[in-house]
Image (cartoon, rainbow, N blue to C red):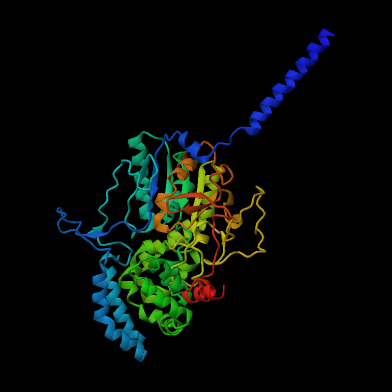
Length: 520
């Protein structure tokens, strides 16, 4: 009897032990992204490849810096001087329909603003011009990441030239830090630079020469094209009053000094008083755009290779035919065209294969896209969702997006059944990430503007970069696929409750609100 009792007790004890172990695993606290970041071993450097905008100066060929002057900035007073100088002729041209003469005006305006930064027929800048920032190898932390080094480049150059400079810089960083690998984080135009670098020094390299890249993060990248660049360059512009008002709302509605102007324009919009102006712009200005800018582009920004790397493959050829619209122009700018085509035909067409090689090699990889803002109203489709600069479809490698002030619809169903079985539709019903090329490693941040990216993603990028295993949108509960800007301070997980209601712009106008308050 004693043996039976002891045996029963032993069996019960074993069951208790099993149960206690199982309950520990069931009820153990799931580690958060915030906790995981604090445990990271950040034992190799990150090289940041920033976007367009490094200052361009002239006078660099002399030993003294006293004669250096910025040639990529233009004050409001300078612009007003140009307006006053050409206003009379501009009005006369519009009244008489002599659009050819507008080319002379635009040539002078663009040359005055951008002429000193222009390149020659081969896409090579004046050697007396360039950036003043030096690529010293010491931590910059400009984007907030720890153990990071920022690469500076003259964004006017072609992508092959910049990529070779980046290659040299990465080698110097590894040498100085005694590291055998680096992580890459690219922002905006840096996405085009990084894709070129990866094509030339990773995808085309032998397997043993790939070990130096540990991770790649694309943040609001421009590698798939930028509508507000490729559309004007190819003559694909459609003005509409709603997109103009959306832009003015973002620019003026929070400015107390300019609120009166926005209110007046808002009322005019509601009464459709802006339509004749928009119609005139489309029927007369846009339709004659090629005549107006025929020489202007070739004397200024049309000579800069960097701009052509901000275009999709299809739209680039539209731009090439629009700007270099004669055999004489194509022959004169053959060197520039060759550099442009290299990026689109060699790099951009291989982007899928480049990223596939990164994933196949087990490198950490992520895409971070932003949304919640309208496009600049100088494109062929101004309703596209964007971060205010680049459309979300492009930065996310193919997300399905609602119009900027719309939703996917109450009956919308996720377009692609993901192997993970998860739901890729945003809580605000504006984004479906299932159509992205890399849905499980693509994050979205709502209400984050393009120029403000650096404030929000430091911990997130560190976690993706330094984690031993690939982090996905399902790894941490506090780092889901969709995040939202909270009080312009930080990102928090988006929920249906905090996403806010999406209201079409026409329902937000002064007159619409008046009638809503009047009639409920």
